[in-house]
Image (cartoon, rainbow, N blue to C red):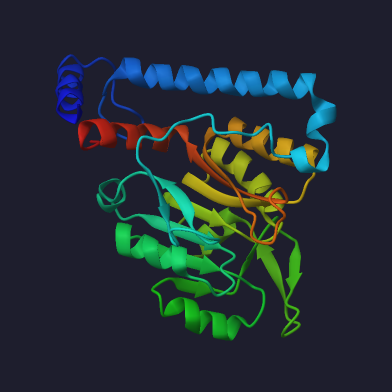
Length: 288
């Protein structure tokens, strides 16, 4: 089957069905890609219809995330980090997709557990930066850095807000993703993976990301985020913002380790541009 797909891809390329993608991917099986995008749009429209017709149901505590299911099917997704239990995240794309360029990963909220970051480095060879201003940050820096990531005791959130560490009682400003990129000299780079597990900061942190992505100030390929709480309105605002910035849900996993099975939900989202790059890579063997 893969040999047939590669042959079809070569034919599609030879006939130049469309101009090169904005990120440089070559045209590949346009009819298949078109169907995937059509399906995504259908699922989003259906979701919005279901929400409008069943608001009372979704606002019930246990149903806050029921409406937000995957709208895109990634051809090459895998669990990175721990294979089971809490901590692993689903990533779209094979190692070759990430290794063909200098990939960059930001991980927000490690709590000293660097299993995901360590696996990302081993599999994809990415440059990884870990951020967490909570707890014993000095010990956390030692523990996390031993696994390969660069640790920063910085918090991520809306610019201008502050965080006070309950251990050392230090108060530090929260930084937006754009602020962090500028501090680290990454302003012109693409973040391949943004992992966020910060016990609730995800709403304000990513609310600031969506307009920056739309404006082209920040480029982020995938977002692996654990959502917390049972506020349906807050969840809906989050996913509407993600959709407006070009992100599609490709994986959902309820976290039942201490979250009662409905209060914490792991989501994996991918930007449509990176979805196309992974699509080309999976079908054609490379994206040029």
